[in-house]
Length: 89
Image (cartoon, rainbow, N blue to C red):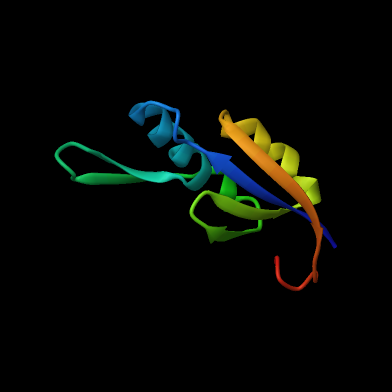
């Protein structure tokens, strides 16, 4: 199976943009009315099978690569790799 190893770089972004990228990717919990209500906001990686290899490094299928890059909005490098299909569900 063909996959992509994506390494993204947030070092040159200001803090609120770093938070925005991570929220778009991984989702977050939102609280309202003095934490009485909790809302789970989903990130793009909740709908894409992936492996978080290390900090700022994600492994995705080749077919899902376009969805990931569309939501990144920061500098990244990607590498094409071949892997066993059973690793990504």
